[in-house]
Length: 335
Image 1 (cartoon, helix red, strand yellow):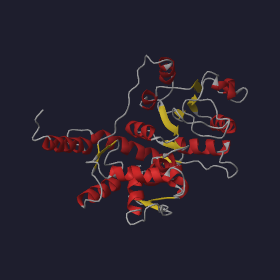
Image 2 (cartoon, helix red, strand yellow; image 1 turned 135 degrees about the vertical axis):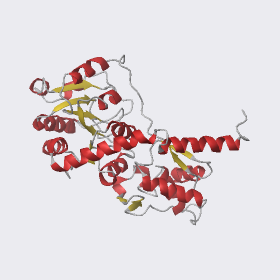
Image 3 (cartoon, one colour; image 1 turned 45 degrees about the vertical axis):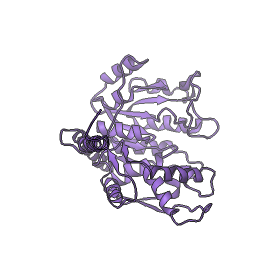
Image 4 (cartoon, helix red, strand yellow; image 1 turned 90 degrees about the vertical axis):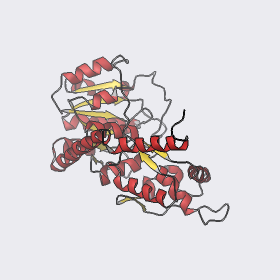
Protein backbone atom coordinates (compact mmCIF):
# COMPACT_ATOMS: atom_id res chain seq x y z
CA UNK A 1 0.00 0.00 0.00
CA UNK A 2 2.87 2.38 0.72
CA UNK A 3 4.19 1.65 -2.76
CA UNK A 4 0.81 2.52 -4.29
CA UNK A 5 0.71 5.82 -2.41
CA UNK A 6 4.22 6.56 -3.55
CA UNK A 7 3.35 5.87 -7.19
CA UNK A 8 0.32 8.16 -6.98
CA UNK A 9 2.49 10.97 -5.60
CA UNK A 10 5.22 10.48 -8.22
CA UNK A 11 2.60 10.50 -10.96
CA UNK A 12 1.53 13.99 -9.86
CA UNK A 13 4.93 15.56 -9.20
CA UNK A 14 4.62 17.70 -12.33
CA UNK A 15 0.82 17.94 -12.40
CA UNK A 16 -1.04 21.22 -12.22
CA UNK A 17 -3.09 21.91 -9.05
CA UNK A 18 -6.39 20.08 -9.28
CA UNK A 19 -5.15 17.77 -12.06
CA UNK A 20 -5.50 14.06 -11.32
CA UNK A 21 -3.99 11.19 -13.27
CA UNK A 22 -4.80 7.49 -13.30
CA UNK A 23 -2.17 4.90 -12.45
CA UNK A 24 -0.92 3.04 -15.54
CA UNK A 25 -2.47 -0.28 -16.50
CA UNK A 26 -0.98 -2.70 -16.00
CA UNK A 27 0.86 -1.34 -12.98
CA UNK A 28 4.30 -2.93 -12.81
CA UNK A 29 5.31 -3.85 -9.26
CA UNK A 30 8.90 -4.63 -8.24
CA UNK A 31 9.39 -8.38 -8.43
CA UNK A 32 7.90 -8.81 -11.89
CA UNK A 33 4.24 -8.52 -10.89
CA UNK A 34 1.79 -6.77 -13.23
CA UNK A 35 -1.42 -5.57 -11.62
CA UNK A 36 -4.60 -4.94 -13.56
CA UNK A 37 -6.72 -2.01 -12.50
CA UNK A 38 -9.25 -4.52 -11.16
CA UNK A 39 -6.57 -5.79 -8.75
CA UNK A 40 -6.14 -2.37 -7.14
CA UNK A 41 -8.13 -1.16 -4.12
CA UNK A 42 -11.23 0.66 -5.34
CA UNK A 43 -10.05 4.22 -4.46
CA UNK A 44 -6.97 3.79 -6.69
CA UNK A 45 -8.88 2.72 -9.80
CA UNK A 46 -10.31 6.08 -10.85
CA UNK A 47 -8.54 9.42 -10.55
CA UNK A 48 -11.93 11.15 -10.67
CA UNK A 49 -13.26 9.17 -7.72
CA UNK A 50 -14.10 10.90 -4.43
CA UNK A 51 -11.21 9.36 -2.46
CA UNK A 52 -8.39 9.85 -4.98
CA UNK A 53 -7.52 13.42 -3.97
CA UNK A 54 -7.38 12.31 -0.34
CA UNK A 55 -4.99 9.49 -1.25
CA UNK A 56 -2.75 11.98 -3.02
CA UNK A 57 -2.69 14.30 -0.02
CA UNK A 58 -1.94 11.37 2.28
CA UNK A 59 0.88 10.17 0.04
CA UNK A 60 2.48 13.59 0.07
CA UNK A 61 2.41 13.57 3.86
CA UNK A 62 4.13 10.16 3.78
CA UNK A 63 7.04 11.79 2.00
CA UNK A 64 7.72 13.89 5.08
CA UNK A 65 8.21 10.84 7.31
CA UNK A 66 11.66 9.78 8.47
CA UNK A 67 10.90 6.18 7.56
CA UNK A 68 8.42 3.32 7.82
CA UNK A 69 8.32 0.08 9.77
CA UNK A 70 6.60 -2.49 7.59
CA UNK A 71 5.13 -5.79 8.74
CA UNK A 72 6.80 -7.95 6.13
CA UNK A 73 10.27 -9.43 5.78
CA UNK A 74 12.99 -9.08 3.17
CA UNK A 75 12.74 -12.66 1.91
CA UNK A 76 9.02 -12.27 1.25
CA UNK A 77 9.38 -9.12 -0.86
CA UNK A 78 13.07 -8.75 -1.78
CA UNK A 79 12.54 -6.74 -4.97
CA UNK A 80 10.24 -4.30 -3.17
CA UNK A 81 12.71 -3.92 -0.30
CA UNK A 82 15.55 -3.20 -2.72
CA UNK A 83 13.45 -0.72 -4.66
CA UNK A 84 12.63 1.23 -1.49
CA UNK A 85 16.28 1.10 -0.44
CA UNK A 86 17.37 2.64 -3.73
CA UNK A 87 14.64 5.29 -3.57
CA UNK A 88 15.79 6.26 -0.07
CA UNK A 89 19.42 6.50 -1.20
CA UNK A 90 18.32 8.83 -4.00
CA UNK A 91 16.23 10.93 -1.62
CA UNK A 92 13.05 10.12 -3.53
CA UNK A 93 11.15 8.56 -0.61
CA UNK A 94 11.77 7.77 3.07
CA UNK A 95 13.33 4.38 3.85
CA UNK A 96 11.15 1.37 4.59
CA UNK A 97 12.33 -1.12 7.21
CA UNK A 98 10.83 -4.63 6.85
CA UNK A 99 10.76 -5.89 10.45
CA UNK A 100 8.13 -8.66 10.33
CA UNK A 101 6.52 -11.02 10.44
CA UNK A 102 4.61 -9.95 13.55
CA UNK A 103 1.91 -12.54 14.17
CA UNK A 104 -0.79 -12.22 16.79
CA UNK A 105 -1.22 -15.00 19.32
CA UNK A 106 -4.48 -16.58 20.47
CA UNK A 107 -5.43 -17.79 23.93
CA UNK A 108 -7.01 -21.19 24.46
CA UNK A 109 -9.33 -19.48 26.92
CA UNK A 110 -11.11 -17.53 24.19
CA UNK A 111 -14.68 -18.65 23.61
CA UNK A 112 -14.85 -21.85 21.57
CA UNK A 113 -11.10 -22.22 21.13
CA UNK A 114 -10.67 -25.39 23.14
CA UNK A 115 -13.40 -27.30 21.29
CA UNK A 116 -11.92 -26.35 17.91
CA UNK A 117 -8.40 -27.32 18.93
CA UNK A 118 -9.62 -30.60 20.41
CA UNK A 119 -11.30 -31.41 17.10
CA UNK A 120 -8.07 -30.65 15.25
CA UNK A 121 -6.18 -32.89 17.68
CA UNK A 122 -8.33 -35.80 16.50
CA UNK A 123 -7.49 -35.28 12.80
CA UNK A 124 -4.57 -36.77 10.84
CA UNK A 125 -1.51 -34.67 10.14
CA UNK A 126 -1.86 -32.24 7.21
CA UNK A 127 -5.40 -33.35 6.44
CA UNK A 128 -7.64 -30.34 7.20
CA UNK A 129 -8.73 -27.52 4.89
CA UNK A 130 -9.12 -24.38 7.00
CA UNK A 131 -11.64 -21.89 5.57
CA UNK A 132 -11.93 -18.36 6.96
CA UNK A 133 -12.45 -14.93 5.43
CA UNK A 134 -11.38 -12.66 8.25
CA UNK A 135 -13.30 -10.48 10.65
CA UNK A 136 -14.74 -8.32 7.88
CA UNK A 137 -15.18 -10.66 4.93
CA UNK A 138 -18.66 -11.62 3.79
CA UNK A 139 -19.90 -13.97 1.08
CA UNK A 140 -23.27 -13.77 -0.59
CA UNK A 141 -25.89 -16.36 0.31
CA UNK A 142 -25.39 -17.95 -3.12
CA UNK A 143 -21.62 -18.08 -2.67
CA UNK A 144 -22.00 -19.60 0.80
CA UNK A 145 -24.06 -22.43 -0.72
CA UNK A 146 -21.53 -22.96 -3.54
CA UNK A 147 -18.62 -23.03 -1.10
CA UNK A 148 -20.41 -25.58 1.08
CA UNK A 149 -21.21 -27.76 -1.92
CA UNK A 150 -17.61 -27.53 -3.12
CA UNK A 151 -16.19 -28.54 0.24
CA UNK A 152 -18.60 -31.46 0.40
CA UNK A 153 -17.73 -32.57 -3.14
CA UNK A 154 -13.99 -32.38 -2.43
CA UNK A 155 -14.32 -35.14 0.19
CA UNK A 156 -11.59 -33.40 2.20
CA UNK A 157 -11.66 -32.77 5.94
CA UNK A 158 -12.38 -29.13 6.71
CA UNK A 159 -12.74 -26.52 9.43
CA UNK A 160 -14.93 -23.66 8.22
CA UNK A 161 -15.49 -20.39 10.07
CA UNK A 162 -18.95 -19.42 8.82
CA UNK A 163 -20.10 -15.81 9.00
CA UNK A 164 -23.48 -14.32 8.24
CA UNK A 165 -23.84 -13.91 4.47
CA UNK A 166 -24.12 -10.51 2.86
CA UNK A 167 -27.60 -9.82 1.59
CA UNK A 168 -26.73 -6.61 -0.29
CA UNK A 169 -23.80 -7.79 -2.40
CA UNK A 170 -21.06 -6.24 -0.27
CA UNK A 171 -17.98 -8.35 0.44
CA UNK A 172 -16.91 -6.23 3.41
CA UNK A 173 -19.08 -6.45 6.52
CA UNK A 174 -17.21 -5.08 9.53
CA UNK A 175 -19.60 -4.80 12.43
CA UNK A 176 -22.04 -7.22 10.85
CA UNK A 177 -24.55 -8.76 13.22
CA UNK A 178 -23.74 -12.28 14.33
CA UNK A 179 -26.69 -12.63 16.69
CA UNK A 180 -28.41 -14.82 14.09
CA UNK A 181 -26.98 -18.28 13.48
CA UNK A 182 -24.77 -18.23 10.35
CA UNK A 183 -24.88 -22.03 10.24
CA UNK A 184 -28.58 -21.76 9.40
CA UNK A 185 -27.57 -20.45 5.96
CA UNK A 186 -25.75 -23.65 5.03
CA UNK A 187 -27.47 -26.05 2.61
CA UNK A 188 -30.05 -28.36 4.13
CA UNK A 189 -28.41 -31.54 5.39
CA UNK A 190 -24.86 -30.24 4.86
CA UNK A 191 -23.81 -30.53 8.50
CA UNK A 192 -25.22 -34.05 8.77
CA UNK A 193 -23.62 -35.25 5.53
CA UNK A 194 -20.18 -33.90 6.47
CA UNK A 195 -20.27 -34.88 10.15
CA UNK A 196 -17.07 -36.65 11.13
CA UNK A 197 -14.86 -35.05 8.50
CA UNK A 198 -15.98 -31.43 8.71
CA UNK A 199 -16.48 -28.85 11.45
CA UNK A 200 -18.38 -25.63 10.79
CA UNK A 201 -18.16 -23.01 13.53
CA UNK A 202 -19.94 -19.66 13.71
CA UNK A 203 -18.04 -16.39 13.31
CA UNK A 204 -14.63 -17.09 14.88
CA UNK A 205 -11.73 -19.51 15.37
CA UNK A 206 -8.28 -19.09 16.99
CA UNK A 207 -6.63 -18.62 13.62
CA UNK A 208 -2.96 -18.54 14.63
CA UNK A 209 -3.40 -21.73 16.65
CA UNK A 210 -5.32 -23.35 13.80
CA UNK A 211 -2.70 -22.48 11.18
CA UNK A 212 0.15 -23.73 13.34
CA UNK A 213 -1.65 -26.98 14.20
CA UNK A 214 -0.11 -30.13 12.65
CA UNK A 215 -3.51 -31.19 11.26
CA UNK A 216 -3.95 -28.07 9.13
CA UNK A 217 -2.95 -28.60 5.49
CA UNK A 218 -4.21 -25.60 3.49
CA UNK A 219 -5.96 -22.28 4.08
CA UNK A 220 -8.86 -20.94 1.99
CA UNK A 221 -8.41 -17.26 2.73
CA UNK A 222 -9.50 -13.73 1.81
CA UNK A 223 -5.78 -12.80 1.68
CA UNK A 224 -5.84 -10.04 4.26
CA UNK A 225 -2.24 -9.16 5.05
CA UNK A 226 -2.35 -10.45 8.64
CA UNK A 227 -3.73 -13.76 7.40
CA UNK A 228 -1.07 -13.93 4.68
CA UNK A 229 1.70 -13.43 7.24
CA UNK A 230 0.16 -15.93 9.65
CA UNK A 231 -0.05 -18.47 6.85
CA UNK A 232 3.54 -17.78 5.77
CA UNK A 233 4.85 -18.14 9.32
CA UNK A 234 3.09 -21.51 9.61
CA UNK A 235 4.08 -22.83 6.18
CA UNK A 236 0.46 -23.30 5.10
CA UNK A 237 -0.31 -22.83 1.37
CA UNK A 238 -3.43 -20.91 0.41
CA UNK A 239 -6.42 -20.97 -1.87
CA UNK A 240 -6.51 -17.23 -2.52
CA UNK A 241 -10.04 -15.82 -2.41
CA UNK A 242 -9.74 -12.00 -2.14
CA UNK A 243 -12.82 -9.98 -1.29
CA UNK A 244 -12.09 -6.27 -0.77
CA UNK A 245 -9.50 -3.55 -0.01
CA UNK A 246 -5.92 -4.53 -0.94
CA UNK A 247 -6.67 -8.26 -0.90
CA UNK A 248 -6.55 -8.68 -4.69
CA UNK A 249 -3.04 -7.20 -4.67
CA UNK A 250 -2.05 -9.58 -1.89
CA UNK A 251 -3.51 -12.53 -3.79
CA UNK A 252 -1.54 -11.56 -6.90
CA UNK A 253 1.67 -11.45 -4.83
CA UNK A 254 0.96 -14.76 -3.10
CA UNK A 255 0.07 -16.57 -6.31
CA UNK A 256 2.09 -14.82 -8.99
CA UNK A 257 5.33 -13.84 -7.26
CA UNK A 258 5.72 -16.12 -4.24
CA UNK A 259 3.91 -19.13 -5.67
CA UNK A 260 2.40 -20.11 -2.31
CA UNK A 261 -1.25 -19.90 -3.39
CA UNK A 262 -3.70 -21.08 -6.01
CA UNK A 263 -6.62 -18.92 -7.06
CA UNK A 264 -10.00 -20.37 -8.10
CA UNK A 265 -11.75 -18.91 -11.13
CA UNK A 266 -15.01 -17.05 -10.64
CA UNK A 267 -17.91 -17.25 -13.06
CA UNK A 268 -18.46 -14.19 -15.22
CA UNK A 269 -22.09 -13.90 -14.11
CA UNK A 270 -21.67 -12.07 -10.84
CA UNK A 271 -18.27 -13.34 -9.80
CA UNK A 272 -19.49 -16.42 -7.93
CA UNK A 273 -16.96 -19.24 -7.59
CA UNK A 274 -18.82 -22.39 -8.59
CA UNK A 275 -18.80 -25.52 -6.44
CA UNK A 276 -16.84 -27.43 -9.08
CA UNK A 277 -14.09 -24.81 -9.01
CA UNK A 278 -14.01 -24.85 -5.19
CA UNK A 279 -13.56 -28.63 -5.14
CA UNK A 280 -10.96 -28.53 -7.92
CA UNK A 281 -8.85 -25.84 -6.22
CA UNK A 282 -8.97 -27.56 -2.85
CA UNK A 283 -8.11 -30.99 -4.25
CA UNK A 284 -5.32 -29.63 -6.44
CA UNK A 285 -3.67 -27.91 -3.50
CA UNK A 286 -4.15 -30.95 -1.27
CA UNK A 287 -3.14 -33.68 -3.71
CA UNK A 288 -2.24 -32.36 -7.17
CA UNK A 289 1.11 -32.02 -8.92
CA UNK A 290 1.04 -28.21 -9.08
CA UNK A 291 -0.27 -28.19 -5.52
CA UNK A 292 2.80 -30.13 -4.42
CA UNK A 293 5.03 -27.36 -5.76
CA UNK A 294 2.93 -24.72 -3.98
CA UNK A 295 3.16 -26.64 -0.71
CA UNK A 296 6.93 -26.90 -1.07
CA UNK A 297 7.27 -23.15 -1.64
CA UNK A 298 5.08 -22.48 1.40
CA UNK A 299 7.46 -24.56 3.50
CA UNK A 300 10.42 -22.61 2.09
CA UNK A 301 8.71 -19.34 2.98
CA UNK A 302 8.09 -20.59 6.52
CA UNK A 303 11.80 -21.25 6.95
CA UNK A 304 12.60 -17.81 5.58
CA UNK A 305 10.14 -16.21 8.01
CA UNK A 306 11.80 -17.98 10.92
CA UNK A 307 15.27 -16.90 9.76
CA UNK A 308 14.17 -13.26 9.52
CA UNK A 309 14.08 -13.02 13.33
CA UNK A 310 17.12 -15.20 13.98
CA UNK A 311 20.14 -13.46 15.61
CA UNK A 312 21.50 -12.37 12.22
CA UNK A 313 18.17 -12.34 10.39
CA UNK A 314 17.04 -9.63 7.99
CA UNK A 315 14.21 -8.29 10.16
CA UNK A 316 16.32 -8.24 13.30
CA UNK A 317 19.04 -6.31 11.46
CA UNK A 318 16.46 -3.87 10.08
CA UNK A 319 15.06 -3.16 13.55
CA UNK A 320 18.57 -2.75 14.96
CA UNK A 321 19.23 -0.25 12.16
CA UNK A 322 16.13 1.73 13.16
CA UNK A 323 17.17 1.67 16.81
CA UNK A 324 20.63 2.96 15.90
CA UNK A 325 19.12 5.79 13.86
CA UNK A 326 16.81 6.75 16.74
CA UNK A 327 19.70 6.78 19.19
CA UNK A 328 21.74 8.95 16.85
CA UNK A 329 18.81 11.35 16.45
CA UNK A 330 18.51 11.58 20.24
CA UNK A 331 22.14 12.50 20.59
CA UNK A 332 23.84 9.19 21.13
CA UNK A 333 21.15 7.48 23.17
CA UNK A 334 20.51 9.98 25.97
CA UNK A 335 17.21 9.24 27.73
